[in-house]
Amino acid sequence: MEITETLNEHLHREFKIVVGAKVLDEKLIDRLAEMAPRVQLKGFRPGKVPVSYLKKTYGKSLMGEIVNNVINELSEQALKERELKPATPPQVDLVQPVEQVVDGKADLEFTMKVDLMPDFDVANLSDLKAERLKTEVENSDVDDALKRLADQQKTYTDKGEGASAEIGDSVTIDFEGKIDGVPFEGGKADNFDLTLGSGSFIPGFEDQIVGSKAGDKIVVSVTFPENYGSAKLAGQPAEFDVTVKAVKAASDVPIDDQLASSVGVGSLEELKDAVRKQLEGDFGRASGVHLKRRILDALAESHSFELPRGMVDAEFGAIWKQVEAEIEREGKTAEEEGKSDDDLKAEYRAIAERRVRLGLVLARIGEQNGLQVSQDELNRAVAAQARRYPGQEQKIYEYLANNQQALAEIRIPLFEDKVVDFVAELISVNDRAVSKEVLFMDPDSASEALATGGTKTEAKAEVADDEDDGKKKPKAKKKKKD
Image (cartoon, rainbow, N blue to C red; front, side):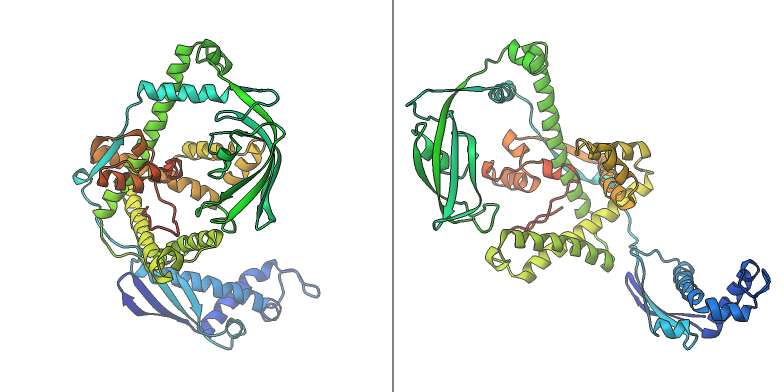
């Protein structure tokens, strides 16, 4: 057996490993001799089958198993002797066809390529700084939330024959949309209840319903937004044939003890307290998302070391697959977004490198400080995932609990959050008061708004997208960091 290192390049190693056919044959004979006492074949007494006969009968199948075992053993030996820590599973390639090796006509010769874990020191966490965005819950926020709750309890009554529809009214309509006179998929509905002024339809649609009466047949002309979810409809002018079947006025629900009772709370004061606590929780989670992002930024900026090429390639491949799917879904090309395919790839490879680096840093901090996800924490997270599927909770729970890949996908963000919380206790965290609009922007938009001194409310986004892992999802239109 011969193990030769053929390439030593930073975090990459390559080896050539040769095992003679005679050595493999000896291992086969040893294996056959070991199994001989247990073999029972017709024409032979139990345990008396000659090894030479067993070799003819089982040689090829056993040799395949032996070759696999030898490859695994010698690959592990090459790494262990040199005290190398692989970052990804080694890549093994046979030099000779496996059939010739199994038939004993060729030596076992294979190459092994492996990327190694980088050796780096964790930065002094007490030297790091991060900013926490905070917004206090005001009485006006509670009042707004109570009004939204009361609006949800509204009832609607028919305004009567000849009554015109106004903003705030609900209309029951039949409609069918057409582009160039041809109906399109998803553009038709009957007995649809639409609240005018809700903004739930294409811009301009609801405005053209205002003033109509029950029994009216009208044509509504609109243009789908450029960023509409369907690429086939985006930017297209359309006409909707609309029949107004009923016009109903809203009956306001007073914000009082009766409203509280209708939602299962004893009094208005108790409802106000409950709403305030819920808002404080929402504000706190939004603040936590921003803090996590800024902690990850601080960790990324304070660590610079070479990365395993295989890990970066795998991460980039996963990201780019999402980007391509999104580009296809939107029906656009990279060039239409003002960037070449190569430009986009370069941007997302930088994101992949950042993610890999952060993953290694977080893992090292967790290892050094004994941070682990307990079984109870994992079980609770699995149960929370299962509860997202009402009626199938038990089935989903059992699937997740018995699927190692699924468990790993749940465990990783839990571990990251635990490490980030640990880091947050050690670094210097400065609170910064911001508006509610900024607090509920995504971290990128919030940073841009704060840097320009504005709020950029048009860039608002739900923070919920980042609550799971504190990382930005890749978008084809714009480069975003983790």
